[in-house]
Length: 160
Image 1 (cartoon, one colour):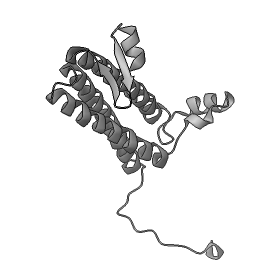
Image 2 (cartoon, one colour; image 1 turned 30 degrees about the vertical axis):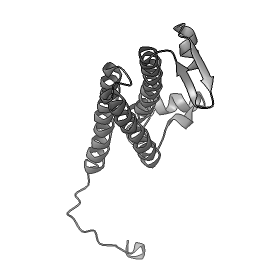
Image 3 (cartoon, rainbow, N blue to C red; image 1 turned 180 degrees about the horizontal axis):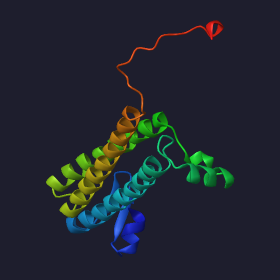
């Protein structure tokens, strides 16, 4: 907040109680842009996560891309479903927490309402993209070419 206050040339005082601004309008301006920066960082982080989920997911990455990543020694980008979905749950939870927080702040006029709508849009779009990746995972596992209604019998190898 101090950097934003200096950037916008808003006078403030830092005491044991926190930041003190001269007027409510200045507080709302600095608080709004502070939350907007947090939302931008969240959006960039979610975009990186969703890129890994849609492009570098080990269940639907192309062999050519896999070979390229391994030749560049970037195989760490390829992640399993367990890793992606646990990280995804955390990032999406954080997006909803930010949405609730900005909604409450906008409701009581402590931030501009466009910050809430921006955060809501980030959370909604990232949720839709995350769910579409989960649906692709479920569709891929169902379309593995096996008839799951057939019972297989074990045959001893000594009889062959």
